[in-house]
Image 1 (cartoon, rainbow over the protein chains, first blue to last red):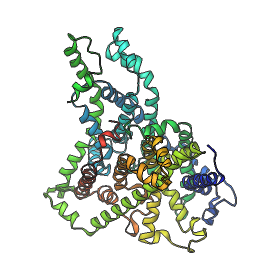
Image 2 (cartoon, chains in turn yellow, blue):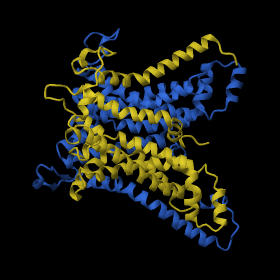
Image 3 (spheres, helix red, strand yellow):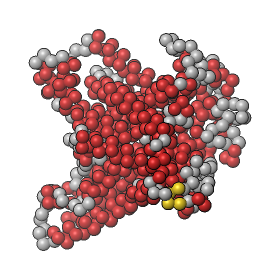
Image 4 (tube, each protein chain N blue to C red):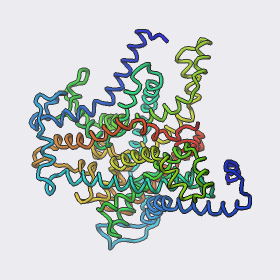
Amino acid sequence: MKVGAREYSLWTIAIAIVLIFALVPVLWLLSISLKPPSEITDGRIIPAHFSLENYKSLFEGGWSDSPFLHPLVNSIVIALITTAVAIILASFTAYAIARLEFPGKRAILAGALAIAMFPPISTVGPLFDMWRAIGIYDTYLGLIIPYLTFSLPLAVYVLVAFFREIPWDLEQAAQVDGATPWQAFRKVILPLAAPGVFTAAILVFIFCWNDFVYAISLTSSDDSRTVPAALAFFTGESTFTEPTGSIAAAAIVVTIPIIVFVLIFQRRIVSGLTAGAVKG
Amino acid sequence: MEASAQRAETPAAQPGKASSRTKSERKLAWMLCAPAVIVMLAVTAYPILYAFVLSLQKLDLRFPEQTEFIGLANYGTVLSAELWWLDVWNTFVIMVISVAIELVLGMLIALVMHRAIFGRGTVRTTVLIPYGIITVVAAFAWQFAFASESGFVDNLPLIADEKNWFGGHISSLAVIIMAEIWKTTPFMALLLLAGLVTIPDELYEAARVDGASAWQRFVKITLPLMKPAILVAVLFRTLEASRVFDSIFIMTRGAQNTESVSILGFNQLINRLNLGLGSAVSVLIFVGVVLIAFVFIKGFGVKVEEGRPGG
């Protein structure tokens, strides 16, 4: 098909608009984070002078005094643990749903869907009260439990969609050869399911990394506060300085790895996000 | 229920063993599902019931000795408060405007990703960036862009000098809505793209032969065939938008009357430690979400079980 010059330039404009729309806020944060503290309020789109001062201030004081290191480690550990547990539990459930016949299957899918629609703020009060009563308020566990709950439906959908595509004849062949259903699951299906599992893991990780409501409601100190909550409570170096520069630098530090991640795994993320979105 | 229909897929080669196999299969299935089901119920069903119990009490953690059962009085307090209805209105405005704009933008981006003659991969990669970014970070980015001290927006051409964006109700809401749209349009676009790719190209070819314009092809072919995908995407985004919290908390903390119902619930529960009143707000939000879902599923006939949950 011949492409006219007019069509070509129209698409160029359309694509350019999408790119600008998606990238400008991130570039703006990058620009602020690279300005020396005295020039942060100059309103220039491109910094007049470049400086790493804001990044340095994030890590100043080392492990004990840095305002950023504890939340960063908390975020990473909490997201990783949640992802691992969620994927294990969701794989079991998704296997049963995609593969086995049992009463209650539809109820589980409908329940997972209902939870995906559930407003988290409605559970904040009870959890706040319960967690304080049983002593897991302001701990990793106190955040991991609600994160598990709200990431399981997502993980189950994605995995069911992937598991339904797996050539199950192989499993039957293994069972004919004498494998138990459990062995067939572990030795034949798990390796085949790895790409779907990985996709679900990325989505769960991003979900935990992003949460804010629970992170500010169920924590009270740097012992378990994650990055989004810590950013909201950032203060300037002294009472008279605005924390704008440090927030921008911290935002860039937590955003760059996600962007790299998204660039590398974009195909998986797209297939995961749209898994089961359309029948067919 | 549907066991007989799907049973046919598995070979019925061992008639004698069938019933014991069915039994062990059920047992295995329930064992595999149990942990996830328990975790999901533990933090949703139980807390919402507990929230209901709390909402029937006068319960302020600052004055625990005054705790008593007061029936539905907390609901009366919330529903007769002007603040609650202002917040419901704000939430509704943010929800409707952001989802409507997202739908249009998402459709345009989906069309670009589907039809562009080059650069599709670039577009798809780039729109995933807002999706991956922490909502709080996105909120800061927009706040810094519009803030009168550090922002660049005021310096752009066509913008009145020194406009204090966070000083007024409408302009604050506009910036919040813009941040929401930026963050969630990619998700909408990807869901719509998934619907778009299922439409057979032959339909467009046939319409083109019959002399239909691009707009006619979009209205007569694309839109009707994508209706299910559009409804599912709109339902999910509407529910998500109804719990808007992060952007408001970061940008205004509810100043200039920009509070949403989620912010109100948070303030009552966590800042004021008024678990009774806060729980009444929580339960009302829950009821609101159920109503929205009900309207979509019964009113518009969204077939959710064929949609998102991969079912």
